[in-house]
Length: 350
Ligand SMILES: [Zn+2]
Image (cartoon, rainbow, N blue to C red; front, side, top):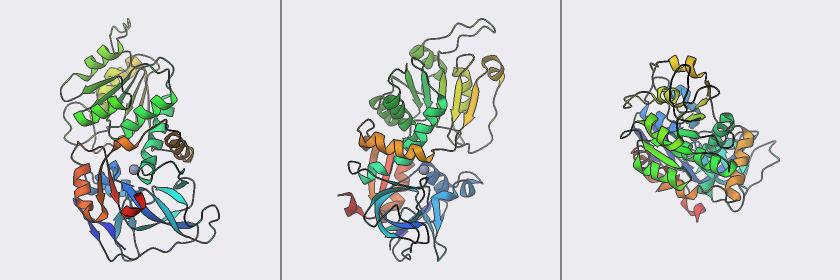
């Protein structure tokens, strides 16, 4: 079969003569219609930190011949079922998550609720391939515990941050302002289209001032300060080496209103960061990290897509056949693309 093999930094190529996998006990084999390129795939592709390979090892599958096949957000049809699997059958439409090796015609997936879910008939395979980032977004929103009328700022509106905006819109109708912050004009434009009430280009504007304009400010007496009225920051940017300006986490601390504010961190930190931390004392925020979705959030994400409350189709900016996987990775890394799909078995998408 054909599969996308990771050979080293910046080198991912499609190869035709890869062994087709057999299902082990408790596994199914999925014939893959669409597989998205995720931020963690890009971390592997660039090997941008010494721990990138270990940290994101779940995105690769090493096959019987030692080939490292990339991809972990995909959807397709079950082609074979292993011993002991009784809740799935050949022909079921499914999404596979965090089981590496998805950029291939066939991939083995453990049949457990954290890695495999059935896809409702009304959800296309490429939409379904965006289930994981939407499920991650749902978890970030849940952790932020947003209350009616509160204002929230989302840092980094790639596929996760856009999912955060969509998840807030779909589940919290009485939210206040939703401010999206990024350096990519095309992503900011998309954030507006999916429900952000204000967008800030961090390369061009002072983020704290712009958020103050969008959300109003809090007049605080002890100590005297006038921060924006922002109850929560969801940080999907993390820290990218050579990023311009202060780390987003620093800006998040400057942004937050005093007492009871929340910062939820999901973007990876590619390097150590230096922070000025007096805001931690003055504002008393809760800073919480996230490793991503729980099984229930996969189901919730698929239900939101099936009901039409969340439209993921508009976030898919580019599509490539598996043979052009190198171009697909270059496109995903260019800062303009939103979600790039690789199609191992393109006709399944028709
Ligand atoms: Zn992912």
